[in-house]
Length: 243
Ligand code: BTN
Image (cartoon, rainbow, N blue to C red):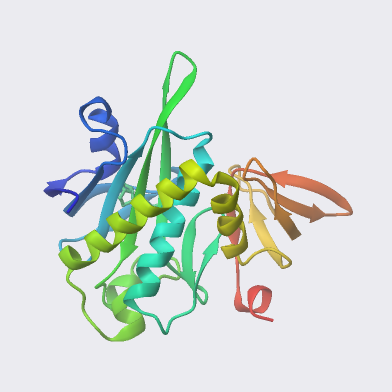
C-alpha cells in the first residue's frame, strides 16, 4: 500500500514539502483532498471516497514530461483494468479520456535545486465513484469509472493496482526509456487529427497534429508552417477525434 493520508490539502503539495523525507518511487495517496491542484492553475476537486488523489516521487528523471509519461501509462493501465470495456486514451499531454470526457489528469511538478532538476512530484487524480450529477458541476466534460460502468469501486483496492503499475513503468523507464516514451506517444490519440490548440494567453487556433517530438511538444501544422506546441490545452470534439 502507498503512504495513505486521511485528509490533506494536496498530495502534490505534501510530497513537495516532504520531498527529502521519502525515497525514490514513494507514492502518497489521500482519502480526501481539500485543495487539489490541476494544470494551468486550475483546481481539482475530490470528495472523500469519490476518487484517487495520489502523488509519486521520481528522482531519476531526465525531463519533466517523462514523469507524466510514466504516471500517465500507469493511470491508463489502472482505469483499463477497472473498466475493460471502456475505450480509454491519452489526450496530450497527460489527460486520460474516454470519448469526449476526461476521467483522469496528471500534474507533474519539478523539484529544482541550484538550477538542476533533482526530481519530479507526479500527481494523479482519477474520477472513480463520482455520480453524473457531480461530474456535470465540474464545468467541463468529465466522466468516472462509476459513470462508465455502473459499478462503485473501493478506493483502497484500486490504490495498490496504481502503485504496482507505477513501479513497473518506472523500472521500464529506467532500463528502456525510449520504449516507454514511444508507448506514451502511441497512446496519444491526437496524432493525425486536426484539433483546437489553446495557448496559456488564451489564443486559439486549429492545427493538424503530425506527432510529438523528443521534448514532449506537439508538432502542429498550422497555416502551412510547423509549430511546436509545448504548453497549453487541447480541445477535442467527437468530429475531430473519432471520424
Ligand atoms: C489536471 O488535469 O489538470 C491535473 C490534475 C491533477 C490532480 C491530482 S490529484 C492528486 C495530485 N494532487 C494535486 O493537488 N493534484 C494532483
